[in-house]
Image (cartoon, rainbow, N blue to C red):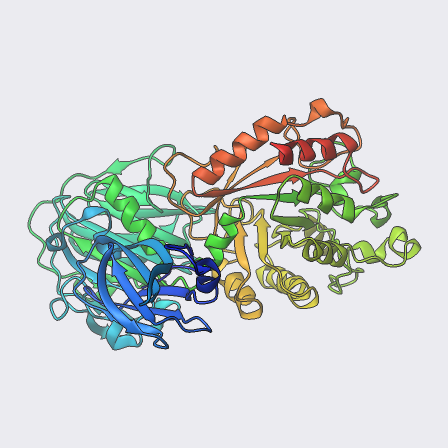
Length: 627
C-alpha cells in the first residue's frame, strides 16, 4: 500500500546569528514526501528536492538517523521495519556549516492491514490483496506467510490492480489450502464490490449441515442483503453491494460495525465434526465448486482467532484505504476547516412544506429579483471559510446551469428555460459562483443529488426500471460540470445510497467516471453508513446523524444548516431574523469541535427569493469570523 504523507511545509528556524537562515531554508525545503510500503519490512521514500541546493538530506525514523542522502537524489529504500508498527518519518535538509534545518515531519502508521489493531502475525492464516497487485500471480501470494497457502486456481478470475479479483459468477474460483475450524473460534474478513443480485458465496465451505465456514451474500428483499456464516445466518444489512464484511466468532460486522437489531440474529449453533475441506475463494467448496460469486474482491483475510470489535474496526479502516492514491487531496479537503453549502434552488421558491421542491414545476417559479452571488461569497470570506459549494441540482432536478440534457420529449429542466434567464442577460449561475470562489481564494464545491424526481415524473420510469437511462443522465450532466467550469475541487452527492441505492446507480461506476475527467476532484457522498466505502470523506449530517464522534480517526465532514429550525432553504413562509439562526458562539464551537475530531465543518447558508443572503445572516457570519 502507498501512504501519501502530503505536501508538507518546511518549518525553517534560525540558530546562531548573522545569517537569515529562515529565508535560506525557505527556498531549500523538499516537498511531496511520500512513504510507500513495499513489503512486510521494507518501504520506499520519495520526494521532490528543492530548487536550490542544501548540502544534503537526512532521513530520520522515530527521530533516529536512518541514512544521509546526497542532494539531488529523490528516493531512498528503507529496510528492517517491523510489521504493524507506528513510525515517524522525517526528512531533513541540512547545511554542514550551520545546524539550522528545514524539516518535513509527519506521522503515519506503517501497518499491515491484516494485522491492524494489534493482531498477532501467528493468528493470520491467510491474507490476500489482489488490489494493487501488479499481476494475477502476485495477487495470489499469501501475504501473511508467502509460499504457504498461496492461492491457486480452480479457474482463475480476472484481475485488475484497481478492482482486485473480478469473478464472473459462473465458474471462477481460487483455492487456499486453509482448513478452518467450525467451532466459532475463527474469523474471516473481506472487502468486496459490485455484487448486485443472487445468492453468491464469497468464500464458503459446506461439507455438511454441521461443517460450515465462510461468507455469503444473497437477496433479502429490495435494498437488502442476507449474509450467512458458520453458526450464524439470517442477518439483513442494507446496500451491501460494496463494503467490508466480517464474521468473527459468532458475531458479524459491516464496515467495522457489529450487525445487531433491528436486523436480527439467528444462530444455528456451533458446528460438530471437524471440517476437512479447504476454503475456496469465489465459490462454495462442496463436493465440487458451486454457488459462484459475481463481483470483485479487493482483499480477504482468515484468522484462527476471534477478532475483537476493536480489531475488526482497525482492519476495516486499513482495508478501506487500500488502493487509495489521493489521500493528500482528502487530507487537504478536511484541513480547510470550515466551509459553506449555499442552498439555493427551486425549493427556495416554495413554502417550508416543500423542503424538496415539487417535481416538474413551472420553470418560471424560479425568479430571483436581485441575485447577488458576490454577497454570498463575501459573507463566506468574512466568516473565515475556505471553501464553498452550491446546490446546482436538488432532488426536484432543476439545474442552476444551462444543461443541454433533456429527457425525450421535454426541454432541459434548467435556468435556461426560465423567463428570468432571458430577461437578465442569460446568467449562468454555476459559472458566476465558480468564478467568484476562485477570485476570493475559496475552493470550489458542487452539490448534486443523484435522485431526480422530475426525470422520473417526465419519463414515467425510475432508476430501478431504467438504471441505464438514469446513469446516462447523471453522466451527461456531470460531464458538463466537470468540463465547462474548470477545476472542481469537490463534488458533494446526496440522495444516493440511502434513497436510490447502489444497486441501480453503482458507486464505483460514477467514481471512476468522475476521476477519469478530473482525478483531483474529491468525491463526497452523504452516506448514512459509518464507516463507509462510498465516499472519500465520511459525512455526519446533523441532526440525521450525530456529530462527528470523539476519537474519530477517519477523514470526516460535519454538516448542518445555519437555521435553528433545521431548514436547508429559505422558504417563502419563513422569517429571516437574527433569532432564526444559531448563535455565532455555538457555530464557532461546532467548527472547533469538528476540527479537533479529524473533521471539517460545512455550514448551510440560505439565500432568500431575491437571491440574497438576509441581512441578519450576513451579520451572523461576520460575528463568527470575529470570534
